[in-house]
Structure formats: C-alpha cells, structure tokens
Image (cartoon, rainbow, N blue to C red; front, side, top):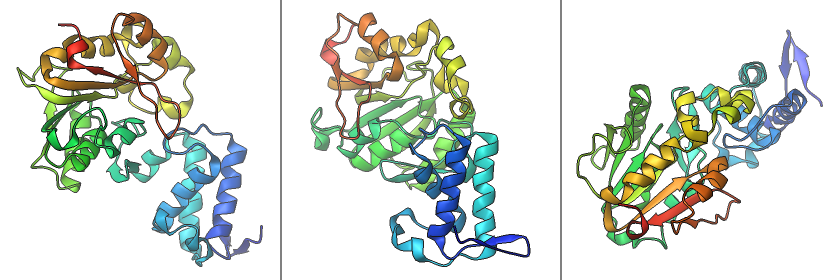
Length: 300
C-alpha cells in the first residue's frame, strides 16, 4: 500500500488504491455477504463508489481517478460502519439494485436480491406470452422491487403490489414514484389475498417469509438486521407459502401462473406439496429455489 497521511488524514494515489485498502479491511473483519455481493471486493466497491459518487458502470476505468482526502475519509468511514454495525451495505447507502433498476431501501424492507429478478428481465417467458400479460400481483412487495421490475418488463401490464406493513408500503410507493410507474403500479394493503376481492391476475409472484424459527436463530447478524416479519414464517417456514398456494387458483386467470421463492424451505415445500406438479426453475445466475405452478394444476 502507498497511502500517505497528511494532517491525520490518509491520502491515496487513486480510487483503486483506496478500494484495495477497503477490501483488505472488510476481508479481515470476516463479515457475511449475500445482500447483492458475495465477497469483500464487491462489497468494498459498493461502499466506496457510493461515497465517491461514482457509477459502477465506470469501473475499472474509474480506478485511476484521483481521490480527494475528504472523499476518501467518507468512504473509509462507511467501511468502518459496515464492520462495526454488521448491517447490509444497502442499509448504509440507502440504495440497492434489482434487475438493473435502482431501488431505495430502508431497514423496514428486505434488501432486494431475489433470483426472481432473472424472470422479470425475461418478462416471465417462456411461461407466459409476454405480450398478452395484462395483470400481475406481487405478494409481500417490500421495497416494491419485483413489482417495479415486472412493470418495466411487461409494459402492457398493471401491477398490484401488496404488503401488510405500512412502513414497507411507504418505501414501495416512493420507489414506484421514482420510477414514474404510478399509473401502472398500485401499492395496496393486503394480507396475502385478503383485501383483494375477486381480482384475478395473469401472474402472481411472491418472495414470502420462509425462514423457520430455528433457522432465524442461526442467521448471521447481517440477515438479522432485516425485518423479522419479512423472513420468519410459522409452521417450519411454510405458513405463508401454504396460504399463497391455497388461494392462488381463485385469483389467477385460467392460463395464469404462480411463481414463489421458497429458498431454504424448498425441501419442506416439496414434501408438503408432493401431489402438485410444481416446476422448480433453473437460473443462469446459479442455483435458486423458486417454483412455478399453472392455475389449472392448483387446488381449488
């Protein structure tokens, strides 16, 4: 390292040197990753670029940019907060990315990271005719990330984004406004299907709570910084998923589909719904436990 000190403040030759130091600091701290990054280098880049006001698309060319002492101090302070507080970086910066879209986040919502982003980018093809999708329901919308990504990918669709949390709905509405989707995305108060009446949808999608009480106790501090109600579910993590599956057929169009992330509850979901022809989806970005069901195959 060639960082120098002047007046008690470290100086760096360029952004790359600052990023190297930040990466080393995070690596020594033995943090947990998994909220958009999976290693110290990417985590450090997210924090350093935010502090310096740099676009991630500018890397690696931006590594050679000079960095002022005050800006470097801001970046290092953010790195130290990440080490000290053990909170996801998105809670420190207030921003995350989902399906290529910036999403504002607060500790009232999960940090966006669902593999459903890949489905959104594909317009849920080949499982639906993208051009014919007119209505989408996002259950437990949180920040609104899935609803917003779906609306961007399905320009003819209207999206209902529901959540039981007033704080989450405020964050979702703010994100809908920021993306100028207020004419097509509605953020509604609803508990699964309660409050939706007889509405039917071409797609019902959800990243619901599915972590059991025992699993919650073993989660790293970074995950326990997220809203418990967005993670934990009763009945060994199945309570919310069971309700979603049970009522889906009554709220799907005849040729509609249900898409649900089951995460580490997937083995229990497979056993619980062994009689249903669920399709477990494959993703280009790696292994993920998300299932799809067609309306005609669901109970009810």
